[in-house]
Image (cartoon, one colour):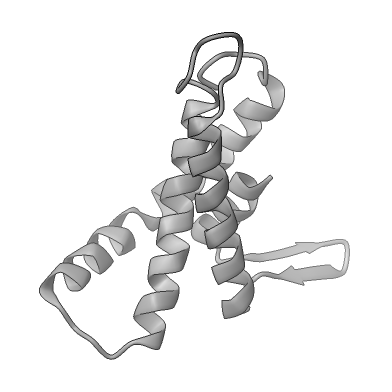
Length: 123
């Protein structure tokens, strides 16, 4: 679910409008909370075993998508709140801006595939 929400934020800007009901995810604090939760869930899902004695493979692709999306949201929150301009942070910002929509669509696709094929080892 977190991957789907983060994918919506990254790909479409975070506003959902269906039948007159509008849901906006553009609140900075909400975006930070979603980013931290997704990154934490990604770390925990990488470390949790799936079946028997496979220690690292549990939900690998959704965990990596959650880590990537969570990192983007937390980094954007950080960049919006700080005045430090380092070359590394500028380069990371450029990479994020180029791949923001792609990452969002990947998060949405991974969330949908994980929902449908949840017993698959890496998915």
